[in-house]
Image (cartoon, rainbow, N blue to C red; front, side):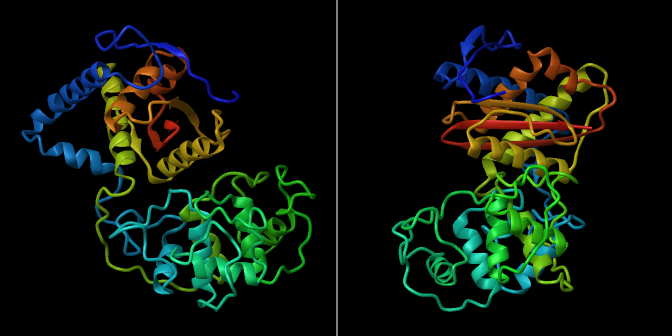
Length: 372
């Protein structure tokens, strides 16, 4: 599939609407969707005897207690010790109290800050970029990167600190921070020898810093997640021993709307399955991270296409940026349930696990479900 376009869809839930354009919800549609959502939720919650369970269900996408000092960094993940090491070394303090947001794409400004702290906060020269102000938290880091030629900017005068950094860009930054050592050929089909990141990626492979997203692909143009950055930097440092800190709680914060949408999407999916006599699916952190990262990738790349990942997959995009997370979850469920191919994935008896990932920006809502 190519670039996304608006489309006309028929809602499967006839009680909600007839035919309407995929776009901003009218106030009437929004009220109807909210009423539908709340009726579904309250019907199930009433069995447990407490409306207060709504908040618990909405927060269930992130574990209440985890490791590495953050409530959203579960023990036993590929990035758990890496995040703990970053905390121990003063490289990260998280995104908010108790939260690291491992599946969130990182910005160029954040990466600059991580690298600067990793190297011990060395002094830099003057700031050469017009889009980096002296009051920005990453100003000293970017100035140091420019003075040491770790970066030359996106243009001679701009750094684009708020843009998501790609895996190819991160490979290049790490490679330059380590002195640009010689490297051989890289093994990935999606890295051309002429690409600016070809030698950095080859060096990462030789040093055991990356094994790619598959055995033959590196996905250099995909935004890199905070978990991936932590893992790469930890491997560059030689994977020193890290002792996990006591658990904390990550409340619904900056990415709370995503969790609300994801939790409700999961609830609607399992309501559909149990209504058909099928067993409910279980969410896994690894699959959630994959799904959320792919939704963020579609958003940042401006394209709408499948990931070619290792799972069965449903994707959807809705341009209604002003829609609530509840409305977004109901809308995506409606779109998939109305499509025979997507519906088959939702109701396949052989599936046991699901990963659910939403992303929200001015471009609207993106959603990915992955199944196995």
